[in-house]
Image (cartoon, rainbow over all chains, first blue to last red):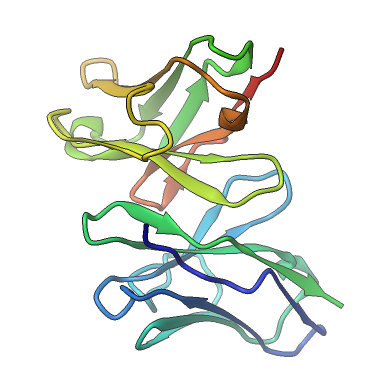
Length: 107
Length: 113
């Protein structure tokens, strides 16, 4: 079955830039989506269609795509950005597939 | 305002059944496909099932196919997930999701003896 691969954890100091990657063979052919999930809460959509931000999402969150890897970039990381981040895409049958999630720690 | 409110979770013994519901409001429910996504404690997100706008097309993850049945009642703006032959590894928070943008608060299913 199709898999998306994320690093289990990323650490960054406040004010620095965090980059979270997601690898998948089908990513050149399918859009990627990113969700933020804080402890005890439902996920929130951060990025859709590789690099689009829904209304209300701060500009410091951005997405990019290059071949089989998509990247979520958080510029000027704040303490409140500490959360789990999940990438999502689709397989050839349009079923959603999620990465394993990345825990962002703000040092 | 779009709202998705799940209900029906609880503690059930292995082999038992449970029916989850999701009441939608704030949008034209019959115009959208909807999804069930679950998250086991401390784990990542797993796509469970989906149903098309009119209910004629459905999807199931391999892990639940043959045990779970998704359905919808557009006259009542409600999505259902009938779960049977439940196993301990079905223990998870179950979320009702619209387009990835709107998520319910989740309903917890615990399968344990």
